[in-house]
Image 1 (cartoon, each protein chain N blue to C red):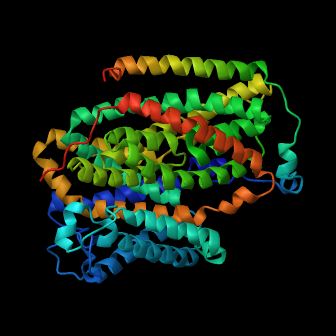
Image 2 (tube, rainbow over the protein chains, first blue to last red; image 1 turned 180 degrees about the horizontal axis):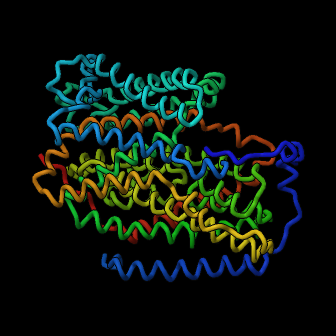
Image 3 (tube, rainbow over the protein chains, first blue to last red; image 1 turned 90 degrees about the vertical axis):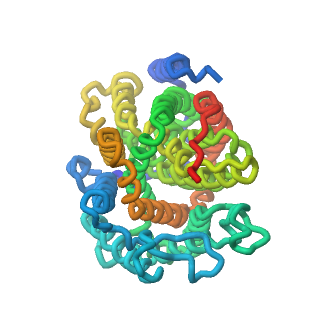
Length: 59
Length: 483
């Protein structure tokens, strides 16, 4: 497994995982909402296209 | 990984290509120049008495099985240690660790081929036994996995000693490169089925990146309140390809290095859980839909090693069940190929997805326009072992198509490479077990991440994967074996 390099400072300043998980929630940004919505919409559309093109609908 | 290293030809991915191509070239000695260069490689078969468990692939060679096994050990240990040393491992340390891994794996593989474990009902009479577990010889993989898990979790000093040479991703990628030639041979047998498998396998890309990823990201952010820095690598790890995708995503969004490392450790643990459960579930409920089962493994299991390994176990379990329940003898490896194909398609786009996320994070989520992603990242992140798979697939398919009389000699010469591919599979299973640390789940703070993983994986990824696999592979079955 590849392991990203760490600086000594990063290692020293690492908060515990418990503290990391307690960080205050940030609401979804506009960019995130667009990413989620666009991905799902495009995904559903492409699945339908692939079903039609490959003939998978023919059971 | 430093940029220079990412651009080099000396990574695990490339060494999977070098070893796979080397083994393939040796296997072509027989069809090309009439010299069986790998005929001495050890082959195992189901046995009742241990003395008949081993023998060389070329049955005409008067070579005792134990000698064949020793020669195989020396050959594999040398080439693998060579690759490990080239990648920076201490050769002596690596050789010693790999030797232990090899002998543990072989012991497990041989144990799994014992007739009472492996023999299917049609073989019991020949062995003179009244019962068997009917797991086929591939039960050796399960034995190897369990042995590895026991060592990895209950014999930590031994696990630490083995760790430098326990490289499940490298071993499975080497096996996958060799599998490329198998895929080429299969295509010569059944072009129509092969083409359909490739076309329909494209569903995996859409599903992993455009369905799974956004839903997991949404769950992580909205339900579990993770920050984008944690949610994105976790979404990639759960949806796409575990370790590689988590690391690529962490790099793309400039997450702290600790984030993908922790996500990766979770992915490995859950992949092992899936590897133990899903193939048996597939055997129970999907033996009448074998290629659905193969695709399901590729879509639901989230590391390359575990996904292809799951495909291999599912292949043997479903073939055994189809024989007992339906009297059908399916050809080997088609289910494995569907699982592998599905997983490879998902892997292909990791680099592109990382590039897309880098752009979105730079210009949308964190707005640092001065630091945009680089197109060369797509190449750095491209899974290079796929090149080896594609080269052998296209080479064998092209030669077989151009020279129809070459197909049979190609198949005949491939015995040694096929045996080595099986060995690399077994090494993968054992190594996966060794590196899986279930203690990870007990570490403080892991609960939230593990909860997201469990909710997403068992809540919808496995079931949507099953539904899409059914949609695209319903009604398709492997050809029946000749004879």
